[in-house]
Length: 192
Image 1 (cartoon, rainbow, N blue to C red):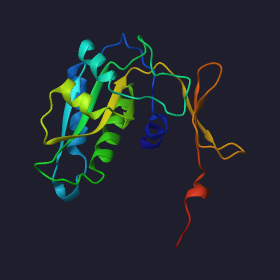
Image 2: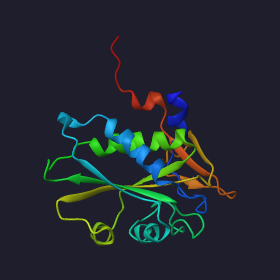
Image 3: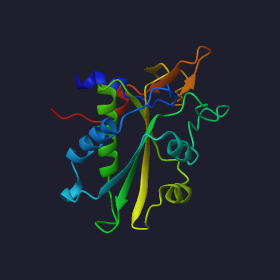
Image 4: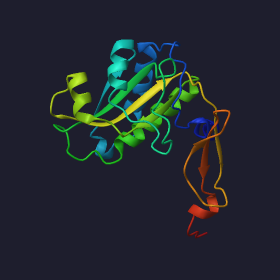
């Protein structure tokens, strides 16, 4: 059921790194993005897919993880992603990618959850460094990086606390808590 996939599709930041991903799996996930909606059907997105451990390490070095967890530098060796999908915008097709990369990335992450994988959509990227790591030409704009793998952490969605904070946090057992606003808080008008 779609609602179950959406509930399970949290930003996972710790993985079982030793459980490698196959290129076929990453290609299947990119195919879901290919089939997704695109503004004016321009289809300006391109992808770099990686499941090679050494190249993964280079990509990892270009990413920033979990801004709210100030005392956590990111996944340690052994809990890093086993694969990446780098989402690019081809500026020879258009200069405005609208929300295409968000739609495509959500399709990829939902497909990953359906396969028992998890992921994290990262926008905090050292883009020039990553451009060099991947040897990308100037017409390709780095939009997002999707980190993927077998999940190693438990993530729970819960209502906002009394203080109204939206900051995610980890408890003493390492469970990642994600506060969400209520449906009544986000629907500001109804007409029936």
